[in-house]
Image 1: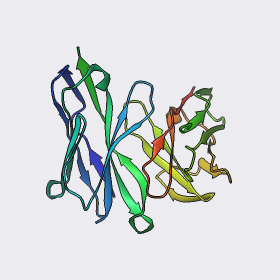
Image 2: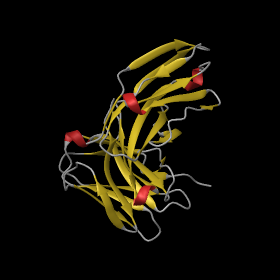
Image 3: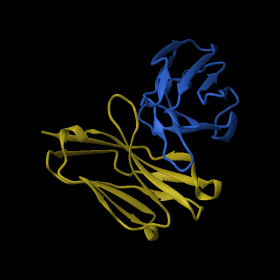
Length: 119
Length: 111
């Protein structure tokens, strides 16, 4: 069975601070995908980033960056120079691969981390 | 380009009643998934529809059923509502090889 653990329930920072959200996952699949989603108060989940299990290269996209380490089953997400608009609940999610790896199966979500950025 | 739309936005029902929630996928998407999100929790996968068939199902009882129409829109039906069914119900759509886009959800309150 797949499992995603986000140990940080809540994080509070002051604007312009960097913040890292932790995610640890469990899966028996050799091919899988990892995601980060953001859920503002409106409730709609917003896709942020995706990584497949064969690509451990860490990248930066604007103020977002991620650190994927298969050896520790971790997929951490960093927001650089946080802004008040970043305040939301952040979810890490895991998906198996389907159709020969061409599509995603069900998403297994963590419990979420509430991020509050103070001005 | 309209994103994923869901109706209604809010719903209040009483125990034992039945409810139908609706979802229209993003243009170009042919796969629809449904998730239940209880307050303070992460979303839980209910099931996924592709080509009008249920392709995958999560750990939910048979009271939860669904349907996908030829235009790829979908319905989620819940029978014999329980207090514990109160939650935000999220619909997500995707196309082959693409990530899931979520709708704004339907907030269901069971009294």
